[in-house]
Picture: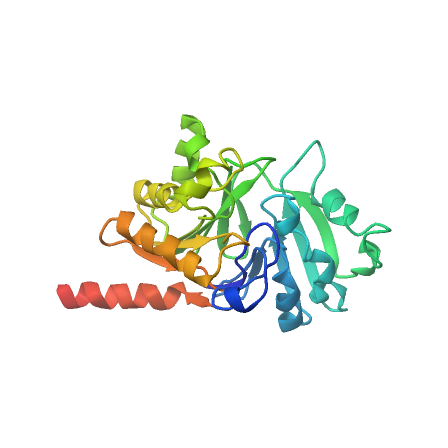
Length: 286
């Protein structure tokens, strides 16, 4: 399983010299399984560059929710316009509607010049099933996160690896039963990508906005027993140094044995390679 970050920013794109190291595009993550199955998580502005990179392709887009920073790149997703492509789109149900309505709404006049009917590669829109489902060799599990509107976290199990994507989540206000389900989703993940938008002083004025601090992100990672935490959904007002400071705070709070990284636009994580290194280390210790 390979994971590539195409957009790591939250709220609104923030390109410029102060965000060049970690990127200014909003949420979009590409997952490629060993069997070739292509899964894309969220359609923030990062999906524009992904679409240009892919060209004609077959894949599935999984949406966490319909806040604009997670869907605003969809009209610019070139791969969905190309003959020979085929894209299936899944997202949560909200007010009785699924992803087709909310993606098409942002493409109606006067907001956008092209209509969704011109995206000829779209094979269908579906509400995410309540139980586990399969995409290629992967088993996908979801649960609702602590965020305004209906928002889902995704667990992808394939190729002897577990990747968990929790893009928008406010741990401190999650009811006990909801937090238990979130921890179960993240349990023993090889890598957990988790919202880490605010510092503690910032969070004091943004309680209830649906985002976490390093303390909250580390709590999920620690209690779920994950191998690596990648901090994500960087605040648009934060420069590279501020993003690094939040990651350093997470490292101070994390237990030994847990890696802390920063989700950076363009980075690729090959979980197969990580598993091979760990297996070699175990053999050497034995």
